Length: 196
Image (cartoon, rainbow, N blue to C red; front, side, top):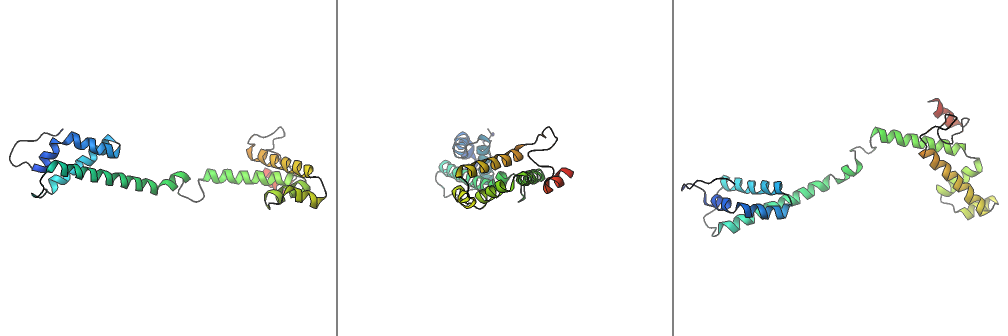
């Protein structure tokens, strides 16, 4: 606590604030939720009392100073809440760029290449069923009717194609032939990828 001299030149509001210092800290801490924030708020009030003295018309100084602390603490909490809301999108995105970090971009590029490679490695009928069902939204029973095959066959081919794509996206470990995922070495895109 700050020592106060008993000279007559001491500012009355400042003297009242120093006498009520623990209560001011408690009020500010209750509003801000932090001891250090509460101390900062009370310090600002004390500095404002020394910078520009209160008018003599104020009858009870301690309640008035308590109100000053409450108002300043509430303003500080609101300002911090507003500032934190401004930067939520940036923290969630982890990057200020629309494209993410270079590592994320490279990972997405590799995933896309692995997906394309897996798609090219599929038989044409399976690939067509998969593309029409997942990308165009055509139901499996419509695909089966158009192709003149059973719904179970279409379902099995789509499930197999989907598991191949998932395996291509999740496989970072080369298989026994040294290739990554289900890529066919003679597929045009896969030849290009394997060369690079």
